[in-house]
Length: 298
Ligand SMILES: Cc1cc2nc3c(=O)[nH]c(=O)nc-3n(C[C@H](O)[C@H](O)[C@H](O)COP(=O)(O)O)c2cc1C
Image 1 (tube, rainbow, N blue to C red):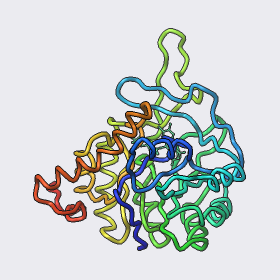
Image 2 (cartoon, rainbow, N blue to C red):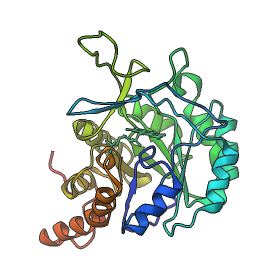
Image 3 (tube, protein in one colour):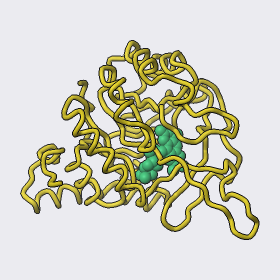
Image 4 (cartoon, rainbow, N blue to C red):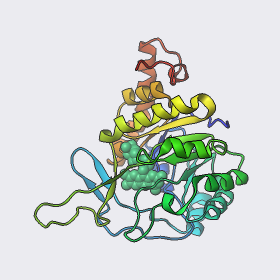
């Protein structure tokens, strides 16, 4: 397993704070993360669903973005101009295994690791989901040939995640648990229309954290230290990071909790890891690695 050495071991979740200029701005405001992840890049420019693509019902965020993407050429231009100090992890999606492999090869020099999005549960009506189009093992086998850097496969709690992980475990270094939970429907009562233009949307935020904690736990129980686990889902407090570590995760991504203004986000990302370390000290734990997957009573 190739280890992803970042400090602090936290990142934004892909698709939240999508652009490199935003990352630079947050750094100027004092944000402190181990890596930034720009929005998933696809094989060609794509619009995704019409607006509205985001609906927050007070408990859960739903999105039906369906992977809008800039063109790979425009993305590379942005990468060349990136002046931030924090390293990047690049998230890729495609329609064929070759799309993923080409994207990984092309952008390898700009990042410290690759995240392979095979789990986005949102698509434009009429389109198929990524997993309906592709064999995960074929995608990850092709990707593995193109890079010596850590490869992360991002799965969703609504997929058969252990089954998929068994097929790809030899090609990946980390599993990201996980993408949004597929897929919800909310209907506006007076007009009778779905709130989301794409009708259905993936769920994220606080409400899904018990589901993704279960996913991390299942993954750790199945694979132990053979792969690393990234926890993504509903993190909004330092305690959530510690609980995820106990379930088996060693790296952490924060998405929906960052859907605020940039001052709040920078402040939050400057302090959350410091607070984790304070809590660890208070419970006599020297490093979070000491509690990964080993300090959990079921
Ligand atoms: C508006 C929005 C856009 C997203 N776009 C992507 C994406 O492009 N690629 C991806 O892998 N995940 C994407 N995600 C999923 C998040 O990275 C994350 O897995 C999910 O939101 C759960 O984490 P959270 O509860 O902290 O938000 C998106 C989520 C949201 C809410």
